Image (cartoon, rainbow, N blue to C red; front, top):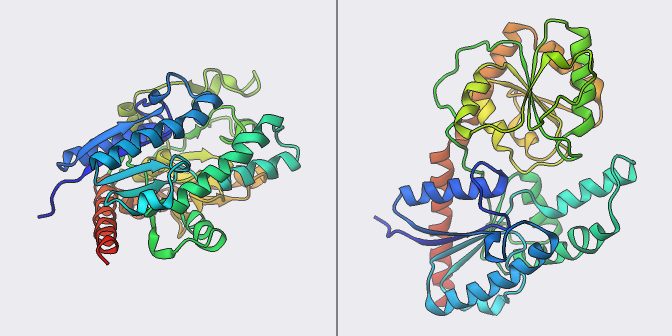
Length: 373
């Protein structure tokens, strides 16, 4: 029986349940505590309320001060922080302590910046000049330095792993795949298939989330199929033409516990996101047997292979429309939903946490051996 671990989870976001990286960090903390580990969670509250660029710049400085004190007091066995948060620590500081320093991707920033710059060149979005100074500039140096000092690097998909090992020349044995801890909507029970041919759209009105692509695809589908109904998550008003808007139900906010019921009423989900790590909503949708149509970008590429979903070319909206129209066939939808449910069970929350804890212990053993060699 291995002893419980003292763990610090650090994330550069305000700590709010059910919201992206912060929500998955809080869910992970709860799961680790349930297994008997002692867990502290440190978020952007360390520097104040809000997530302004100034707060994001200040956050690693506060984290470094906190961690230097923690190293001195031997307060933690494991420190698990989002990428970029260690850049003020040195390899010597990290290497001299038995504490294992883990850096965790919530969607690797260099890949996100590459996607945004490509979109800017194509005229899809406009980058502010300030973007090139921090988020598209210095922040990448912070991320690279943090990755360099960490004992263990956790990534969300194979593209991120390849970036670390092939571009940054990180040792492969210090990189491990992980996943966010899905919420209560994740289903282990076999779904009742086929689910109804109703479309669920996930994403607000940001470029990264699909923005105008979703609007164009949904309008086209509604005009071609007068029986189709759509539910759109993350918006207050349907961003489609007035004459079809009455067939789009919008849900701007919902409790995580409600998401399972929403999924059971929809057989198809559309997610034309332009950048992802490993989307929790997609994991949860697949577990319910929902057929997912998504852009072929890192994250979805790993999930929707082998008939577990449909990958479409980013920007090819006709391809997305055709993929959804083909899923009106009950047999196709049922087969894909069953494949999706089975494929996603490896991301069950208990399995994700078990593998993570195993990685923690292995890294701890290796760190202690290096200190005594």
